[in-house]
Length: 517
Image 1: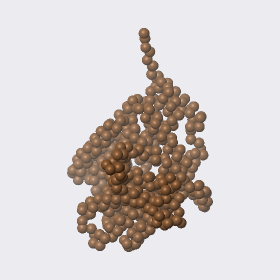
Image 2: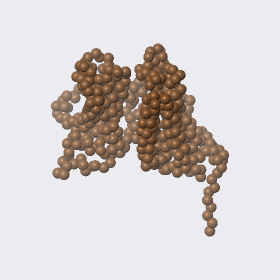
Image 3: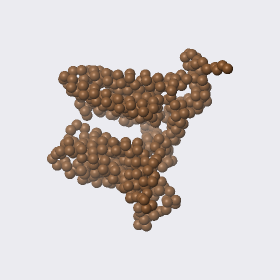
Image 4: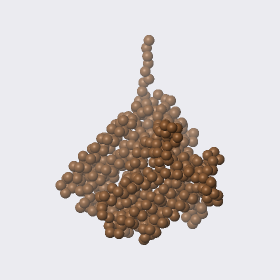
């Protein structure tokens, strides 16, 4: 008895067959149309004209917010670049676990999987093209951010090392993105630990260099070596990729893309929320009664350990940045204030699933009943306590390192931090009460510059960020800390009212429902 093994086709034949499959798929409507590309191009053009061009013009006619002098750049470059490279590598790995470069249309992937071609033949080209796109976009984004925020590209002595550093970090981002998708969780954890340990060693060596003479070359060399160490092993893992998991990721990505294009971006993000698991019995005491509101929220947070861990990191970091920006008198305190508020806003949504439970109970009053006097307390006690405690922890660390605070700033710092936390909680309530896209947002808004209805849709999709950033800007413009805190409370109350209207709870009858509860 003889057995026959399939003979692998030559590379040229495999390339031609893959190209033929893609051409046939494109003829079935898989190729993007001109009309489909016109709307994103239109939004990009509006963003460029109304935001990017004025910002670039303002930056070119004014000094940079952060000064990076040629004398100090080499000395502090290595630790800073090592930290940035580690953050980019970890972020690329995490993004690859959810939406990697090998995610394609489910039908096309099914056709290619049904052939005798090796996954390296039809996934290699896709990976190389998308990694090139990702590296280019990351490079442009880093260069733009460095130009707008610093004076790195104002002098030839720092421009060339800065360009080399951004190019290396862009290569790291692309390579880590592929690694996160094709490698197992154990390999990703091993790479993350190795990169973090190596960055600490290199940063220590670069910081002790005499006068930082070779700091800029070391800062440019580290990301390049990291990309060279991660990229080739990631491509070698293509033949052994789990095609079943890739098919599930592609199907989920296709559904999320459909949700995003139809306006319900929060539904697309819900597809990537981890399912709560475990600790079900911990919600009930031994006598059969439910635990307290705070204990219920803590247990529900532990049922999604990944999100809880991210919140445990973001809340203190955001609180520290927020406190530093509010109390700081150095360069760019408003940037620290805004960044800290955004960090607290992100962490407030990851402290548990109680926000979603509150939305469901408010929108399904006929099912749960209208006696909801204890509903806000049951649902909001854990997010409020967790966000306040995390922000307080980060602020306490900043106060310990900077104590005593500037004269006359202690009381105003406490008021501004408390007001920012209230504003963030109000913005989070507004975001989590979001339902389907309102039809009136699709109506045209005719202006001399064209139809701006697309900007309204974008603002509705990211309303929480818009409220936080706008609120911080308005608070920063108010000269009195008490007035800024009162303004934050008013904005949060407006967000709560708008969130209740989204769920169908109008102002009329709201007080009577509270009294009945």
